[in-house]
Length: 135
View: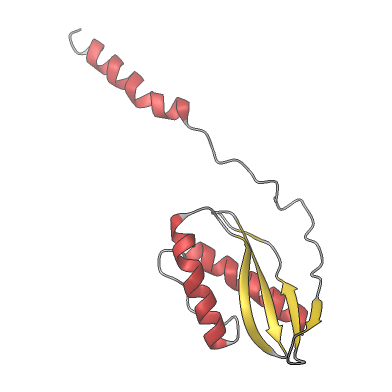
């Protein structure tokens, strides 16, 4: 009987985090929403070179949605910009590395950033979709 009170108190204390748990909120970009078709936009720069901006598809990952936008100068990847990314510390640290590797490789054949595997996979998928849309 002397053990019943501590067991009860510790059981309630252990259940409090479970009761207070709130799952992450869906941002509304669920799999049910159809992805818009990528739209290509072109402009002519000051040197007469044509740049084309191609958004990649939105990839839903377990950390959150990932989407890139690729700017091409001719056939070369000039820049990559993240349109959507998970709000996660590893993602924040990984994005510059992924972009740098993309500019170096000039393709979606890049290495995964350690500690941000999910984001790296989503990034590569969205990047490949943009490359495929460019043709």
